[in-house]
Image (tube, rainbow, N blue to C red; front, side, top):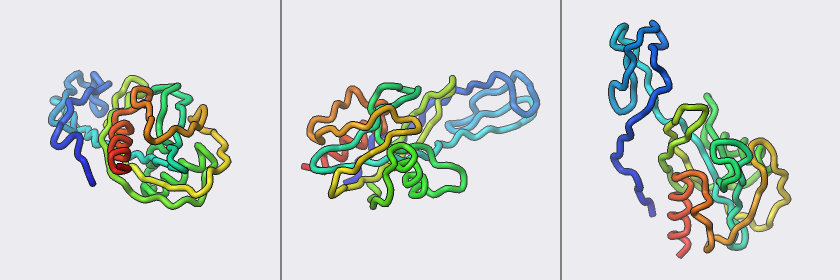
Length: 182
């Protein structure tokens, strides 16, 4: 079942730029829902969503969460995953992120759905599209947290603390996941 939480919602973007990156004129403003334009030289900066991926990893009714080690939302719960690098497939990004963050290798992931999100970082709010996968494990692996994960915690899938989760997209994905369990 696919549930659409944000159908057709165009968010007003904010730009960290006052001046045009091309000509330096102070005439840079939002042109449409996904771009900014310099009214002096005509330069257009598109701000399409960045792709990110995450996994709902389940073992014996528990879901694996990563406690964020860094901002944004340090100390809050997140799913393991991260941004897709240029030239990288979403699947390769998920494989890389699970290895970097948890030392988790050779798992089979099934695509669940995509969820829009905002990601505030260093004064810029990025629009993202988060592609969520599910992974069911037969055994609970030994994990080695690294990269931007402070801790890995298993939480009963029926008692997910939605108020402690860092991002809207992850809360929405987990709500769909919980609904599909019933």
